[in-house]
Amino acid sequence: MATRRNPTARQVRLGAELRKLRDAAGLKATEAAALLGVNSAQVSQIEAGVAGVSEERVRRLAAHYSCTDGELIDALVAMATDRTRGWWEEFRGLLPTPFLDIAELEHHATYRHDVEFPHIPGLLQTEEYARAVFSYRVPELPYGELELRVQHRMKRKVVLAGPTPVPYEAVIHEAALRTRVGDRAAARAQLARILELSETEHITVRVIPFDLDGFAGAWNTMMLAGGAVPQLDTAVRDTPHGTAFIDSEAQLGASRTLFRKMEAASLDPERSRDFIHRLAKEL
Image 1: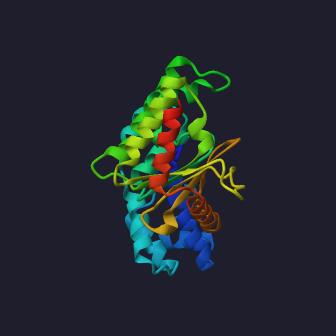
Image 2 (image 1 turned 90 degrees about the vertical axis):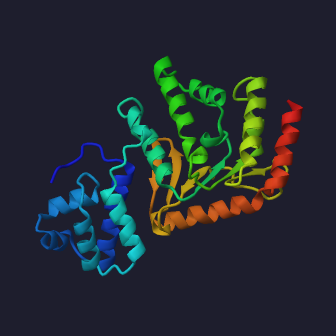
Image 3 (image 1 turned 45 degrees about the vertical axis):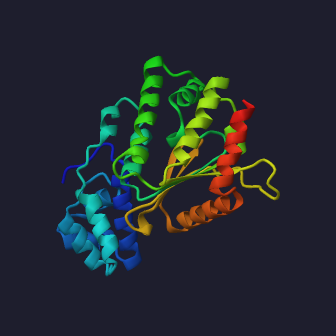
């Protein structure tokens, strides 16, 4: 059984889901190993995502774990047998792994929800805005790496503009809309881009204004990506130590609830477009 040196977040997630099924069944790794005819260390490697697993073994394990959710099992099989080498692979070894993991997550997502307070969401950013964000990093990035990050961010937009675009909803605080990350012209172009995208059928943009009463949720920046089944949804948060991919049932439930609260606190799409129009005229 070949092992991977650097499993992707998607491969790690498959292993974690198999571990959840085993834990729910109250079985030990040694029992799963006996079923597959391997040792417990190999089962641990599968559950850590550092070793692959075949469709036949996924189905055998699911049956042994008394899992009767056919849609979940099929989704796990799809993850185990997926051999997609997407556009993000050209950046492997050039950018940090989380950049590639985000792109792969978006590629397979059934929906995308963003909540942003300090910045415009990455999928809505213009090239000038993205370059200004990456340029502000301390220590400064070498020019070549900065441009790679900008290119990667621009290519991610394929999920919104491709032949089968992902339904996308962004909740953006007024602070992000008003902050001039670049110059006045770049700020005006960024607002125009948001308005243009918000007119498309599959993209919804909502604004949380400064003057909203009783709002204390400005720390809840997040991203939610829908899985093939709800159990495979993923929440993503930036932390001081890097990007965190969240898959526990409790934390996913909390993230969904927080998004609904942000959505309820925001202006409806039409009023949000009017709001952004007014901000653009002020520039």
